[in-house]
Length: 343
Image (tube, rainbow, N blue to C red):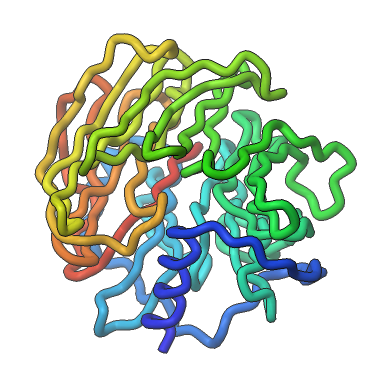
């Protein structure tokens, strides 16, 4: 069944780092087993509160309903539609709202994943990587003209961050930086308007949020956490590049969520502010897609997902000043996550 096998694989992949040599696959589009059709979204979405742009998120259906894929909320037209069907890794909308970037397994690839770019409706997927290894954590530059993604190498075990144009055979691919185990990245690189990166990484039981220039120079540590039961997720630049938001999640010894802190800080890590501290509960599917946030195109709001029971999560909206918390999605038994907001 699709439910059991892909999610087990997803948890194994996200929970470990592998060093198995594979031959590169030249697939030009992702391939999935035949999947259930994504059902129409019937949640009463508060479009007026959202305001503008397009909102992408992943939904994993109830355990007895056996579906998984991406949905897009067209806020201006108060319309929801399905997009890509199947398991994807940290999907993200281009800032201009036209394309989606994501990582996905390839036919016969085992742990081989590639980075794909598709139209917002999921059509015309194009493999833009072709690098041996497992592609993870893709993201966009602020002008939608460049993409970034990590590759967990099956050759030397290092994890490299690349930048290139969002096309199949780029002439401008460059390696930005490299992580050597035990230091590994834990999520997508967010890009500021001045092309400064904010990243999250893990090593020696310490999770860190840090920034660097687009060429890997001038790294600066912003947040370091070694507290048991506390995890950090999804650092993202504000639209004006003046703030960084992220999520701190708290779990008990059994892995059950207790609460979240939606955090805001200055670009040097100072002025740490808790915008909201909602209660949370249950277990999730795991991985860095488990919890995520995204800024609205005008920078006035933040959307994030909140765990609400075992394998259940919904989207919430909060103003950038911490006011106006409101629920966005509400379907019973689903896990909504991997959220991305664009024009």
